[in-house]
Image 1 (spheres, one colour):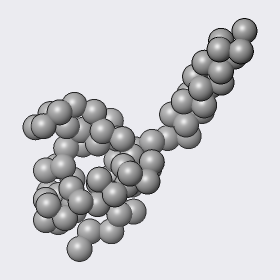
Image 2 (cartoon, one colour; image 1 turned 90 degrees about the horizontal axis):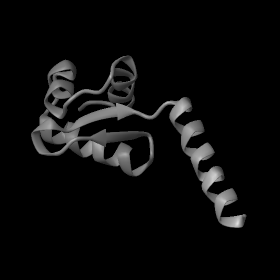
Image 3 (spheres, one colour; image 1 turned 30 degrees about the horizontal axis):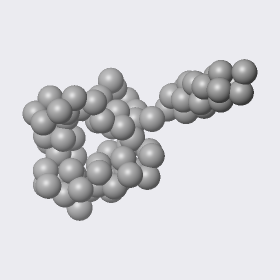
Image 4 (tube, helix red, strand yellow; image 1 turned 180 degrees about the horizontal axis):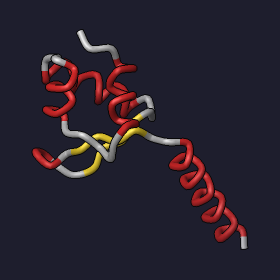
Length: 81
């Protein structure tokens, strides 16, 4: 059993990892790791890029959240103008 926190810390260390790489680094089952990754993504704690075999998982940083909020506020101000 791989703890979700362990996956998040591994993702925070680098520029994204594949599901297989995460399973290898944690000595976990690939399917279990993928299930945890999807749960973390649904909770808004990580994001993914790419498709199929080129999918990479990334931690969502505070900078990402700030950038997203700034874009949201900019879009609102354009609509109000």
